[in-house]
Length: 74
Image (cartoon, rainbow, N blue to C red; front, top):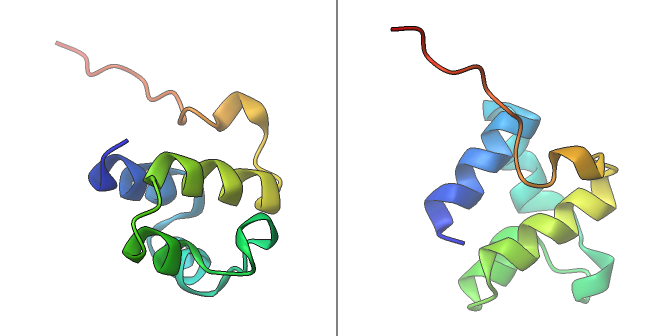
């Protein structure tokens, strides 16, 4: 997963302000209590970080691949 995809998933799920807080401050227990930002900076795959955030934050599995957005009308 690209970092831009990770950021878009975070924005879609948590909103612009809260997604930043989650990325910086949520201690991911399955990754040694490091934050998402710390893990990504250390080279962890953003997909693994995203899934850890989902599990820790209680995001329903139906949204782990993103929120389905309505297609644009032509």
